[in-house]
Image (cartoon, rainbow, N blue to C red; front, side):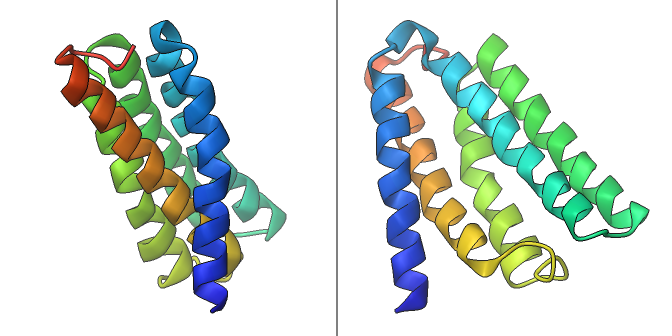
Length: 138
């Protein structure tokens, strides 16, 4: 039940974000790109708050670089990079912070809520691209 509730909360929180992006179709790539960067930046903050090792902080910053590169590519070249970034971010949430070695840094509820949030954003970005047939969601 605990898992379902946090997945539901993540989905509910994604809805206003998606609605905001939908109301600004010309800026949707920027909205989703900046959002992906912010989502990635939260994890180094958790690491800092937990006084994690410098190695762990470096790993979290590598995630920021990875997702930041996807976000920038999505805003500049192809919205499919945003779909990929948002679609892969749950692997970071689950594999590293819920089930993996970073579970002590990030609360389980946060990783669960991010899972559904990220997948809804990825799905919306993919639907926008598929419906428009253009290179970018914006």
